[in-house]
Image (cartoon, rainbow, N blue to C red):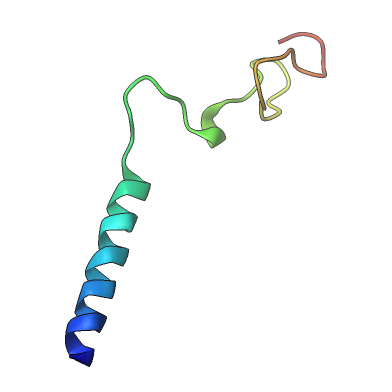
Length: 53
């Protein structure tokens, strides 16, 4: 019984890891959104603090 519980837990963790690596086309990842002029990471939809991007 304990082996079955551990096996189901490990399979669940593997499924969560697969969904974590899933990439949707057209959606930029957090690390890829940067200002074109200063290179600072962009958070949200507002203007960059440098005022150029």
